Length: 359
Image (cartoon, rainbow, N blue to C red; front, side, top):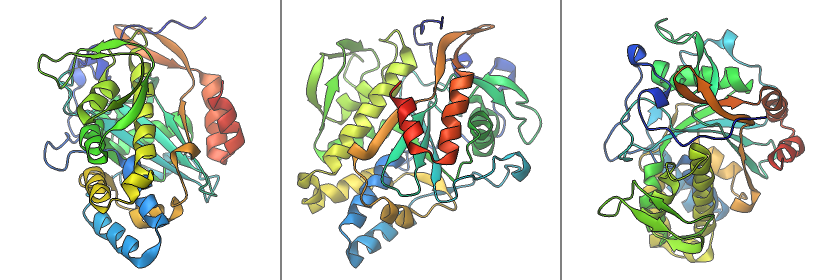
């Protein structure tokens, strides 16, 4: 019988998957500047909405936004011989890595708190977003300098030990899915994005108290039920994990809720018909997004122009619950379940992917 999820661990060196004697040496620390990483998914889909408006003006606007997005090297140091073979040529898999650099509890820089594999089927009529818990216990390949990896660790140790290239290797080794593109975002960007939309509707699953709130005193009470949230409240909701027995699993669910709420509001007539609001929303989303050097936001926007939140499926990678490896609290993957699931992703077998999502 699987272990019951434990209380969320503190944001210590241990929780990031890095032991004290193996601190990152070459991994890039997040830049604390105007270009704070924000939600790439929102950018992609909002640009797609602009594409849905057709017209040359929309294309030109997307090009101007795309030109301002920083590019990162994600694949240059990934050995080709170690990578999975691309099976479904027309499907795309985007690795989205997120952190929360403004979370008061975040004391470690080079790591990824959120790991999502976004699968875009060949017909682009839907998207499946697969969240991999950051503490999933996996085999991490050797880093390029040979000083780290080559052993089992939490999956986000890949980023801490070798930056984006090692993280790509780690996710590809775990899933067997070839990653086509990479994006880095910061879920702290929820605040600006939600405020640009004028708030979003979220149904709170249970009453709780956030202990890392943006309110003075650092506490915010949430009551069960549907409610309108401004940016600060939505960020508190999506950030909190210590209030729940299932810790990061709850945070994953809440992040997914807020993403869907943002997309619903962005796609509403009130937003699309208001140029000032739409413009501020796109800028809040796109101003600081970082993507790999090969990703074309314009092409992707056109491919996804018909996609809406109702076509999105949020899935959590198959797990067996939590437990301990030595002194570390980890998430154990459901090895057999994950193998079957990611095989379906690799083959672009959408019905099988969706079936797994309902279990």
